[in-house]
View 1: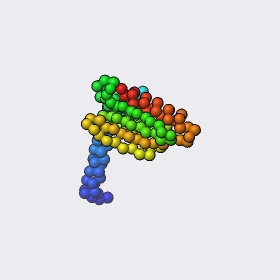
View 2: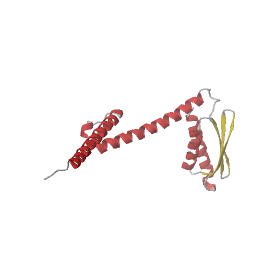
View 3: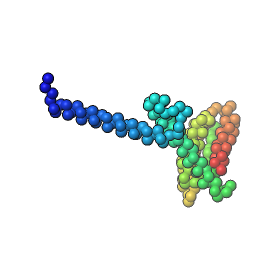
View 4: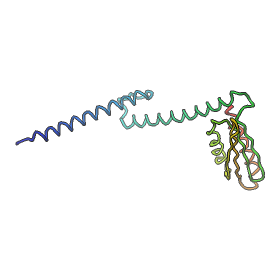
Length: 171
């Protein structure tokens, strides 16, 4: 049997390349595992896919924590100037129409989106939203409609209370 030296060298090169790839992946997994907190089971007892899933879940959890901390930071920045500082919220009910006027600082984009989300959660239908900037304040105006005649008073009070609580929880 005559072996071709070129084909045997290709096989050896492929083996070497594959071995290097596995070693590199092992080093990357080790680095990833060193960045996440230890789990209840030893890492060598947890399968690699489970370790990767755990790392992905940890990263998602950290992203959510970071977003919450950014919101808290914005709230603390607003409250620095005392009780007359921003944010300020005014809720007015006119029949089935609900008008929300929100006055915030320039770095408070999350608050506007949170107010919209709260309105949707509470059953109000947002019809129009606009804003204007004056000096260091942003004036947001949100027009929405609430349910039928029977629910209007109760819904308006509930919505107003939730929006006020949200705005002043920041302070």
